[in-house]
Length: 229
Image (cartoon, rainbow, N blue to C red; front, top):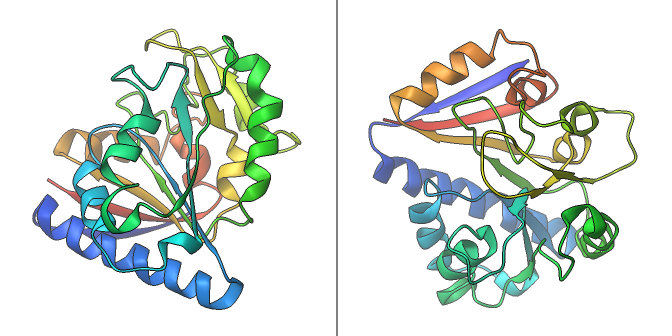
């Protein structure tokens, strides 16, 4: 386990510095490979970060952006991660980025695993930047400890990049990258704010992976914690 801590005094300071780190990595990826990839998470926490990124000068037309997970809802639903990303990140100077959404026309996420896998072939791996969040229950992406699919999601012997998940403690069916797919990243960041998340993280550092799935990421990769009160 290698957790590198980046601790800030405020979310404003965090977002300014974190956005600069992300842009520097993406620029390096573009310089070395012609394109770069950015995999993000939903929720409220990254919105100010996305706003800063969207107003940053970068060859955004050479950046592929997608999600670590998605709630299986239409884009008109306020719960849609894709809608949040489009409104806050794929706009302004970043409007030309290549965004690959996860939600498909299928009513059941299970039926969309193959299509999501095919769509993701547009993105080269390992991902240049992966930004994860963490729930109060220790879930990350949509790898929920309460779900019947958690063992499959954490199975490193799987060939699957995606898994359909039905949480029992949260609404909506989900589509999520598997642990194996998440780990296939050059730079993994865990973006958290608030004292409660520091408490959850401290617990996760010594927890069973099935009980707190973020532990499975922390145990197998170098993760940079980005945190502010």
